[in-house]
Amino acid sequence: MSQQAIGVVGAGTMGQGIAQVLVGSGFPVRLYDVADDQLGRAQAAIDKGLAKLVAKEKLGEGEKRDAMARLEPTTSLEALRDCEVIAEAAPEQPALKEKLFRDLSRLTHDAILASNTSSLSLTRLAAVCERPERVVGMHFFNPVPVLKLVEVIRAEQTSDATVARIEALAKALGKTPVAIADSPGFAVNRLLVPMINEAAFLLQEGAASADDIDQSMKLGAAHPMGPLALADLIGLDVCLAIMEVLQEGFGDPKYRPCPLLKRMVAAGYLGRKSGRGFHVYQ
Ligand code: CAA
Image 1: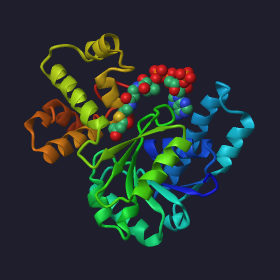
Image 2: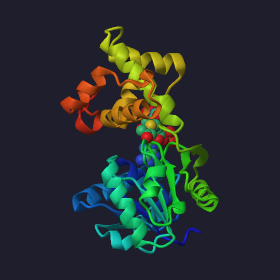
Image 3: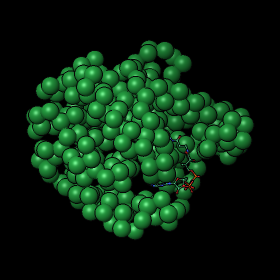
């Protein structure tokens, strides 16, 4: 199983993390992005991530070199033609993902097309594909090399064989897969992002400072980081998009996005990636 190449589409934070765990687990990876400079940044980030493992003696220097040699960056989607599984981690834009999936389903015959989408319907993505039974969700969590969960999301069209293959792949990466139906927010984001949204309401109401809200959940609920710091890690734009998907998907006003969250996204305060979110980053 570990001999066949895996494609990764999108060299942003999630694509980098997915590629890192794949090459670190012995899989040759074709990492595709439209932008050459993004591929360069991804290679540097993956190198740095693997170096952390070397520093902690979880990986040898030679193993790190071998892992980096398994990484093949490319700006040609064609290079993914013979991949057995393609993990898509492109920006969370429905039209972009639909085009990618349509193109990938024509380019490949029986490759499994697995999306890391955090909010879009897999059933709708599968519907634009040829042989939609091979479309599935394979949802990792940020930071990918650290967090152990993979949500395996079954579209209406997904076959049992596709689900079984992705569960086996997740296990081969040292992750724990959980099976989830194609429902808005799946499991983790449906629980996590409304909590973040509620923290934004607390801040908006002036009930507590951002630091104190975060401290409350770290010390009072043993969360590794507070909800507002977590929003900054995830990206405020991503959090807002997930709230909108929950609101639209369930038609329930309890999922209304916090106006402060909307204003921050409109202002470009997106979290760590823009240097400012609920907290400020150097
Ligand atoms: N590669 C390998 N190891 C890495 C790494 C990388 N890229 N990045 C971090 N690590 C390792 C560190 O070396 C460290 O290892 P040790 O414990 O062995 O020393 C460990 O991970 C923790 O890292 P740090 O010491 O730098 O930082 P920390 O202890 O403060 O933890 C955190 C940081 C892992 C982010 C932790 O705060 C955490 O788990 N936070 C919650 C994150 C979370 O909830 N993520 C889910 C977001 S939702 C999502 O992703 C889905 C979506 O669709 C939006």
